[in-house]
Length: 430
Image (cartoon, rainbow, N blue to C red; front, side):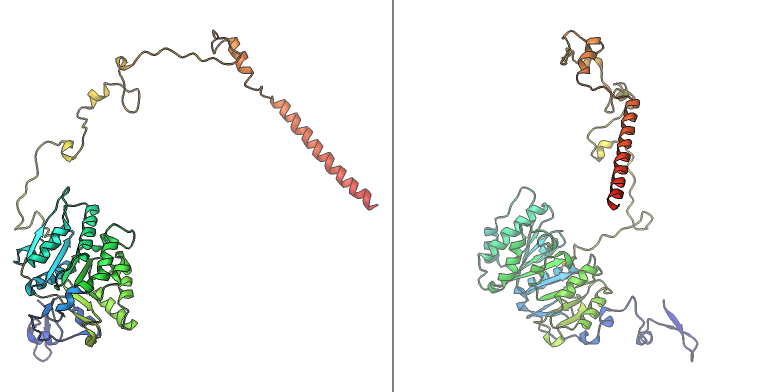
């Protein structure tokens, strides 16, 4: 508990009391609103909850958010998936439809709401996207597609089929928001997977048909700029990576001076979980395009994407877990071939690095006799005729004495030619 001494009344004052709060004492660090410029701090507004999508007490959007392109970002644990979940719950509350491609199964409980259903295709299964779109049109319900059980290539193919099916159909005047979790896997900055063109096309052409897109990623720099540039709304939680901050700086530059952007990005690096900077030139024009606040709208379902709670075995409430006492067996860890007895293995021999061999495993082969030019067929490599035969191929080596004589003659020739050149030049001068 924080305490201080009062000079006039030297007794301890609890700093958690209203008197302490007047001096700025609080639990934890400063809020993001206190770090940023006061121009972006807004009071709570009275809104019509039946006509407003409320992500927080200070963050509200009109219903036409359903056909906008938005980008939700933040590092792990900062609250980006929580924000996406609040967005989906608000859509369900207002009777608006959405489809969420849940790559990590972070939204497994939202289907507990009456207007939301959930499917989890497995390896070897496919989804008839034509039938899926018809179900969306007739039922009016929203859908969460759990992709966790599928390899990435199947996820990308499924998203491609969905985007094409949606663009070929019409929702009958109703809007539809499509949410892509871990979107950097589907529209990466590097590479062009199968899903790339389809998502970009949905972002560009969807608004005319009432289709919106929410791109969710913890790495803004890893999302392709062609898709990111289509977003008109940015909800940014805590980000500390320099490349990610540079990517946001490039996208948030519209209508905002550089000093203001620098201050905002600096504040983002200090934000706590749940705090966000929301940028929307269309909806926050009167607020300077930017609103700062917390995503604090109460949840109606349990958030599945939260971090697990890790406990030591010494914790009082930790479950009792005894170690397995069965004998060690390497096959339990996936080893396919096990050597249990080295001595029996070594008895096989030591002739090679890969183990020995047994005599009865060898086959009998007839020796091959090679003939050499100049040799009789009956001669062997150790005979005199063999030496005569090889003599025709191998030149005789010159002795060291002969080689030294050659070098001496060469040196004398060089010296003689040099003297001749000098004497000739002297004769010409005379």
